[in-house]
Length: 461
Length: 77
Image 1 (cartoon, rainbow over the protein chains, first blue to last red):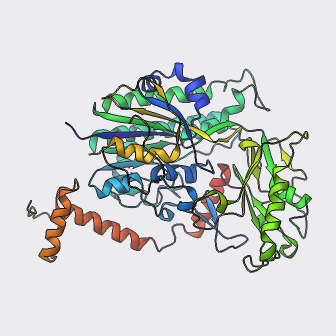
Image 2: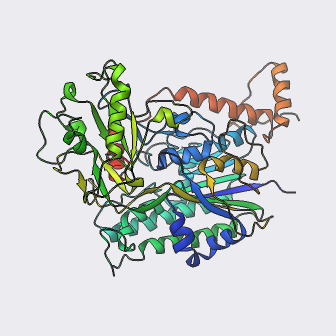
Image 3: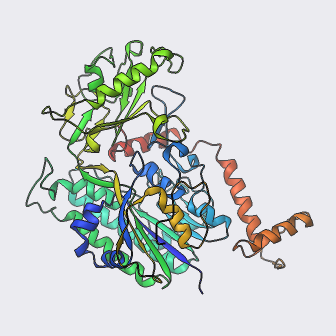
């Protein structure tokens, strides 16, 4: 019997509500994988964000264990110094690291964060945190030249927060076409047992065009020429997938996954404006225009807490002996944190409506803590409201994002499809956890998952 | 399995104790590496990459540029 092969198709931010419910009938190739495979919702990690989610998936380790809680982290409890998450910070073994040790060959493209590239038994092309194409973005280094011969200037990502939406769409399709051209080239011309790629374009198109198709969006624009922009991109991916299915060896098992879901954004909650209003954050001077907190004149000796923006809010307490000008006595830390957590959970929406806000204390949530987690992690209204860290808005609520147009936020559930050409699963619906993906991939490759992986093999595989 | 002799200028030989070689020869059987050479090459590459890890990944300018991009993507601020 021939050696097993697995192809993982990563669709960043594909939510079950679109892929399985709204669009599936228009996506014949994905539909066929669903009908003959196992499929369902995939519960993402906390936080359900691109970084750390893809690495949680690839290692089967929770974000606390990885020590990765988002794209940025504080350096040594500084008020302003941060480090950006990158591949070197990933110390746990990924699926392809395990396969490399077994001598199996992997090809990995665009999995965040895989910059800077690290060695594996195979080939790697880094992800959208790559600074520029001038950098070394492949392993082995010689691969870069080969890529440029095949697709010219490789495109990692496109900026989506723009009002120039026609230009955005053009860039999106150009990026995706190049990525799939390269995928097809590598599938055909290189040896591999495991092939995984992530298409980031899906996340970008959802952020940029959600308000044109969802009547429930508070900024819904009906009859727009962009009404089908998201659907059309899903169709484009389905066609690209059809081409991949034609060229892969017949025995290839296929896994389709997203890292988290997506849904309409209700608005942005200015966490630092709220902390100012409640007396937790004190400025020497309130800014006349919108600025980032790190540029503001914060009176740290009168500040108890401050926050970061993003799809979720991170809250930091100003603790004596830990922060440079900390004022909370260590013995008062837990009381202050509990009181603040309760107040945040009770923040109401702009019309006084109740929000389904969840506040997490990292060390109580994760089985193990590495790195420098925030003191509190806040998910406003089940993520419908994003967090804005900037100040100078003179309000707590913004109908749009604070740094350019953006219509969507993340949701907790992504998707998975597992297809094995040797076995008809008959479209069985099983919901899984993001931690289950890596051990399931190993099982599909007939390798026993290491005992320290936190997930389990999906039932029936 | 014996190591293939090659005269290519892209490859060279290193000497290692025979006992170590024998151990690796056994290990190779448990993997899909084609030879002791390919296993040792893999191990050395990982070792060299670990040494690189001590350096800063992004220059100051790169970091500012990436922060700007991450803001534009909604991941931070």
